Image 1 (cartoon, rainbow, N blue to C red):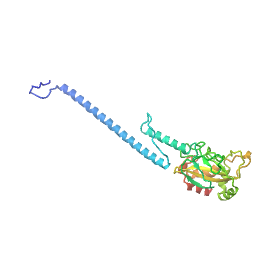
Image 2 (cartoon, rainbow, N blue to C red; image 1 turned 180 degrees about the horizontal axis):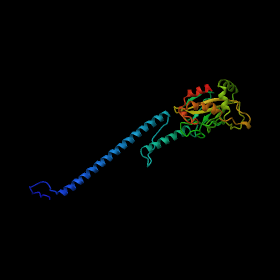
Image 3 (cartoon, one colour; image 1 turned 90 degrees about the horizontal axis):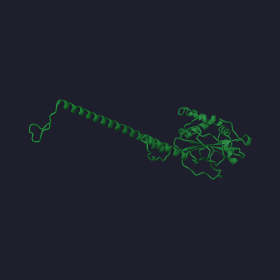
Length: 288
């Protein structure tokens, strides 16, 4: 019953017990709905906070790794359907692919030292390809990734080809100065020289000189490219015998290096080259 404005008996409405029970039930439902909505909002807030924390941690790790590898990383535009970590993973993937395309891609990536037996760190700086007739330097480019799919675990197959050809993972350049070859052959250590000289098929139709230089590009933990330049003597001259004894180089150089890094990689054929220090290779060559 609703009181009229001029009714002075009471300012309250009167309800029956049944009506009060209905009101209480509805209030309970409303309170329950409010609590449920509040809990859902709180849970969503926690999820967003956790995801934001993961994103921040992943971004910090990515930036640190990019700085270490000299990768210029920029977030990609958001694609419809990408949310949170998936967008970040896509950006990381694209950044790594862009880095590989720049430094292990179709373009030459490292100018190697002409000094025999020298292990020189190379930072990932793109250099222009040499003229075709430039035989003074050899460039390292990618023909294909041979041993590992990981962008920083690449061990190229050892090949021999003409100087100035950037399409091979490992290039052997002919040395024309016999005096340099003679002095280098006596200084560099015969075991390693002979091992490398017996490794690969010679792809040139020209007569092979007595000695060739082998360039083995390595990716180290600073993100740069170290080029191991070794002298290989007594290369075959006969065109019918322009192939080399297989696995010799791998047995003398790769396998001992893999054994040294066994605690880092279980698979001896996939070397974590980003973890190799120059002094490790220098010591290995001294021992062999």
